[in-house]
Amino acid sequence: MPKLNLPYHKTGYFSRLMCDYLSEDASIKEFYHRFPKLSEFGEQIAEKKAAFPKELRASLVTQLEQQYRGLHISEATQNHISALANENTFTVTTGHQLNLFTGPLYFLYKIFSVINLSEVLQKEYPENTFVPIYWMATEDHDFDEINYFNLFGKKVAWERESGGAVGELSTAGLEDVLRVLQGQLGKTDNAKKLSALFAKAYLDHDNLASATRYLGNELFKEYGLVIVDGNDSELKKAFIPYAEMELTKNRSFNEVNETTSRLVATGYGEQVHPREINLFYITEGIRERIIEREGTFYINDTQISFSKDQILKELENYPERFSPNALLRPLYQEVILPNLCYTGGGGELAYWFQLKDYFGSVNIPFPILLLRNSALLVPSKLSEKLDKLKVSITDLFASQHQLTTSYTKQVSAIKIDFTSQKEHLQQQFKELYQLAEQTDASFLGAVAAQEKKQLKGLMHLEKRLLKAQKRTLADRLERLTAIQDELFPGQSLQERNTNFSQFYLEYGDELFSLLKETLDPLSHQFTILEL
Image (cartoon, rainbow, N blue to C red; front, side, top):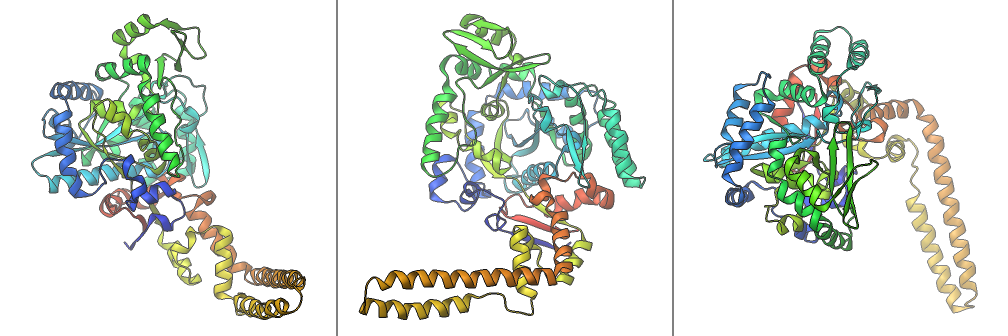
């Protein structure tokens, strides 16, 4: 399968922060620990090994085995869970929301990034064991962000009332979504496999966390992926000291604000704004912010409140009721996992850059940050159409206006670019300026006004000619924009929109094998893959 790599900065879809990070720009170096190069992992391993308490490993293994109870898992996954008890075992982690049926394609790219990196590390550091981790965001409460996926340009949505942590939501009602999905998938063998997978995941499990664990396990179990649910009372016991520090000292608020001010002063934006307390309180149907006012701790939009002593006692007795927000979740993850590297998208990593000093203040090693693989899947039929139009796939990363304009100029029988005429005109006016300086200074303004008028006239003629040529080439431009619309739905990256099932219908399990073989987590480039 033909593969092309494109530097991220040439795609136009990634922030300056991410592009500067990948180029190891000096301006960003103080905000991360080690760059994701294979050679950097040796020191990261030593640092994490020295800092990670051995007693946490036994608890982690016990809770993972409990979370997987009743689920058929592969030998590779079981071996990885068991290996976590060993002090020479480390994790490579990515996190993702509980999007319905995995959500957009980049879910697959995240998972294969950590699977492939774990295998690369295993070869480079064979005395250790490396475990790929998918951290389920079961404690999120943004149901509207996860209750749908896009298939053939249409939204397949789960409509229901929601509240509290999404992982605890009942899967009741998803049989209606299955019927809609079956209608769109058709009756091919691959369609039947997808329908059966959806049914077993969502109709045979009581809540969204269990359904997502089943789905992730079925898709990736042969690669030894381990799925972690952080919404676990035993795992959260290890986080009690940090949650207490958050409640009583506003540690993250102070440290993150200071780091963020430096990040902003360097010219980068603020991804996440820290609150005084970056914890939620969760019980059945509720996940609300904890707000402290004059010594009393209130649970936002409820009648629940605590004194300082009461909330600390609540934390000690019921740690599962305290949920870190997006800013604090990274610390929780790094406290309970022997983790070396966090793999995420550009938006995720952006807020990790706000956290390095905070990690240092609580003596937790800051992980290596890896931008997950990104890819564009190009069906061969579309590649053939592009070849006929004599357009490169990389041209499609431009805006639609830029694409149609450059293509029109490229294929037009008439030269549309008036650059040479503009240069000739400016040269003539240069001589007029010299003449004006020798006569009357007031003449300079008249010359400048005339130059501006004539350049504007040339630009207007150029635009009219371009518009006329676009009408002449309307059929070809329509075919070109249709291809771009299919590969870049809504003028955004395919991976942020399209569900994997759209490609699985045609390619089946080969889709997963191809992604596994093709995606290189340490290439730091965008992948274009012709199917």
